[in-house]
Image (cartoon, rainbow, N blue to C red; front, top):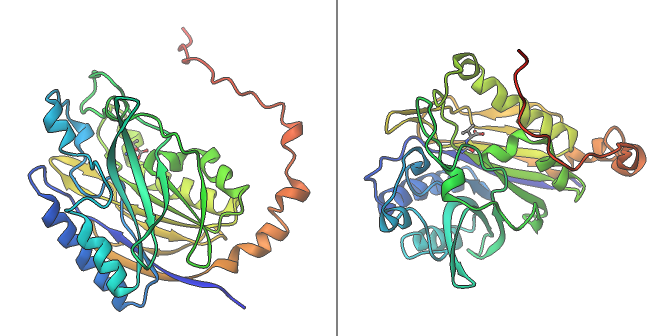
Length: 311
Ligand code: CDV
């Protein structure tokens, strides 16, 4: 019998620097109710959904920087989302910034949580592939994620929930085949990915032109090569002068996009996903046990150093 999960991708338009959590959570609640009206089991929100994408600025005042992070989840501002999820009987996946005090040290992560229909957190992931720089760079715009976040320390776990095996990744993770494969070898059936992808942060206009293509290229390849659904959700539009791509989408294990947003604002798209749709691939073309041969790959684990341009 088919196992269906009706999923909503809740794309967000820009969040202004002075937009407070109450206002943002009201937007998230509106989309959660819309998803419920569509009969959805779960709604997926973007990376760093609660605030503007602050790594575009150098923030030296620690109190100001801390104001972008949650010290607990749910925090009082986000509690209404958990309450509404429980009331409506709908799950959600939320990206946010996390501060934890461990070993007398403040640790900062770019995090997402998976919440079930009872409003209980059943999974947590911390972003591993951190793009950008830790210091200011000589480019048209800054991207200081390496300054503001540690590399995630939870691996790529897969969680039992919504009748299947669910994994999470965050933004830049989606460009790395290892992300999907780490979950693929755990027989993941649906991967949820939030993103904030600005263009114009370096001098490569040719890369900007291809940004939306590259977004779908990696999502579709990751989904198909690991026989999993992928739900990819943007925060997009022009946020504090930064242009960010949209085209949030739901990708089937065949690699086909089955739903995609058509605006750069708050928009909900829905698809009824058959979690068994990956099975024919898992049993045949991508039967890892039968065909995958990692012991023959001569695996190089060291990362090569920077490439020196040829004279
Ligand atoms: N938030 C991100 O991780 N953004 C990166 C950009 C900076 C390239 C991305 O991979 O979309």
